[in-house]
Image (cartoon, rainbow, N blue to C red):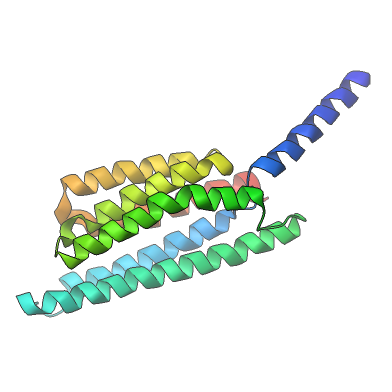
Length: 201
């Protein structure tokens, strides 16, 4: 009996330490929803690119702006849904969302994410649209890997897959939209589903 009590106490201590050093309120469902938003955005972009009217050279700047607005809408909906579901999970578990671990996670992911965003803007400005999907995937993956030190370790593997897809997208620039859809859409749905059944239940 004493051994069982000791093991229970060790487990409790481990849980307390994990809560204090890792942000464990991330919602798996937010990943699923982000993936769905990304697939909707990719489908809309595909319709513009391949099923719309033919584009002349002068039309491409307008097309790029519309594609950028679609990506921005996907980002806003994904972040907004992620915040709402994460706050709900934190409240359900009696935890706070804005704490030392969540701040550390955000700071760790901010530099590669902001750097990638700035680099993508520069590529868009100079007309190098063929590698923008690659840039987004690689820097997003690096941000996820960096932030994973402060949350569930499983998150790191999402980042590794995103970086790998980004490198493939760079090798095949004509298929950037499809790599973007798979990375931000399909992978997020798979990751979110696994995280939901592993940690949210």
